[in-house]
Length: 412
Image (cartoon, rainbow, N blue to C red; front, side, top):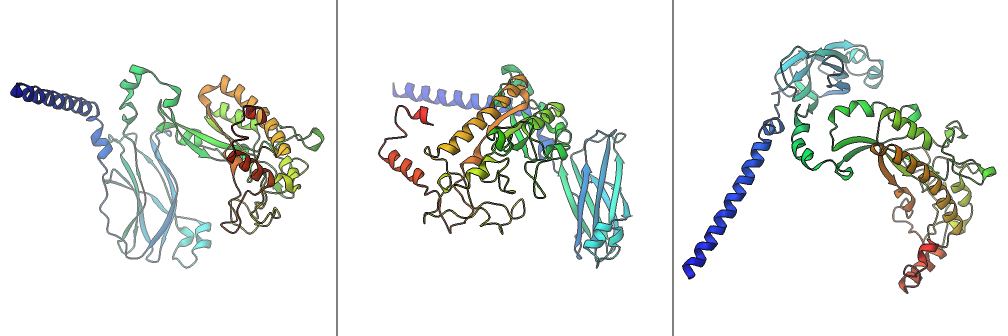
């Protein structure tokens, strides 16, 4: 009896082991065609330069959109002088580029380097007649002492990489949540903020990997102004200024129109937070700036203080002298804040909902994460939020009297 039990257990173990081997073998059969392309990373042997070579690649377009040509543009300088610049394909095939191209900008930046006024290089390499599959691109600069430096190196996906799991996907079908988006955060769409996003990355897309953009919509700032009680304006003109600065670079309908025209998915950032009005004070348009004039609407520090909005004007950031000293409180008793936020958010969201219904493939989602900052910009010198309404809500929460009330949904 004991022997029989051991035999059964051994048989089960062998059966499981055989099943694992079959699964692994099947997986290998599925990916073996692609594995060499994934793992093969040819490298060019170089003679490292002893004198530093400085440079930059302004353009390296490896996509076959121009009749199978690769366009290259950049510059390089060295105290030893530049002898040649080559585009190297797959670590082996070296193609010389045109050098000594005039670059006034480089001459101004590096006046002490020889021939910096002619530091440019360029080329358009035709690969349509070369029977090779591109795997790597390298730009190699050689100085007049024979030393080499690789300015950039790119590894390209295999031509059939996107089909690796396509058969499995076809078996069960594509679901919305299967798509992974690489999202480019940008703004100023009308003036080129998203230029080429829809073309440069398009060859890398598949059924489950897409490229999109994330654009801030300043829903408390892009309004119809004081005369209309700061109602949200989806067509807010970029011509409105506060001093020399643009009040808002994007409006909602402009972003939607761009997304449809370029078939570019969008994550809408509905921003009514501390960064939304940081560029400049515009109370004739921005209800955020108006609300910030009343300390009761603001976050307080641990000393019951409210700082001036430009108190942190010397901080470095995405703009000069950002106004980050004041931020709206978002406790349930900040009724004015919540009224304008809710009204304008709902207006903006209703437009986005129509867009999402009509163009579901272009709608990534909506985020309001900029709205929930407890002012972090005083960097440990001050702490937020000690607004009396916030403290009241917190104390009620501790006693279970607010968050867990049955009518809280109506107060939110």
